Length: 154
Image (tube, rainbow, N blue to C red; front, top):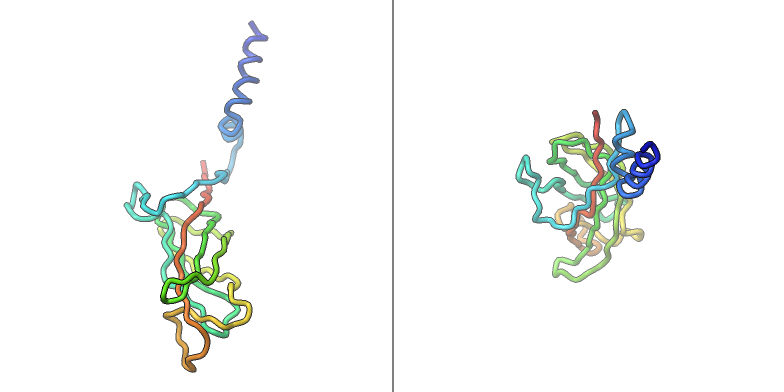
C-alpha cells in the first residue's frame, strides 16, 4: 500500500509538475507567463485591454523611444513583451521588433517606459512628435501585446 501511494505521487509529479511546484513554494511567486494572443480579449474586472499604451514619443535626434504603459489588471505586472511595428504614414512597413520590458507596474497604474530606438541613424521621427526643421521621415507605430507576467503574493 505504501508503494502505491509513492507511485501515484511520482506520476502526479510528471503530469502536473508546475502545479505541484507552485503549491510547494512559499513567498512571492512569479507566474511563468500569461499568453496574450488576441487584442480583443478584455480584462474581466475592468472590461479593458490588460495593458494599454498611452502616448509615444521619438524625436528625430533621440536615441530612445518613450511611451506610457497602463496596467488595467488587478495584479502586479513584472514583465511585458510587445511586438512593435514601425510604418510610414501610408502604412508601408519600415521595421518591426519584439521588446521585453522588465519593470513592475502596479495594478491600475501607469509607468513611463524608455527603450533604445530602432532608428540607429536618427533619420525618423514619430508622427506626433515635434519636428521644427521638417527633417527626416515620419513614422507611426502599431503594437501587439505578446505576453505579460504577474507576481502572485500569498
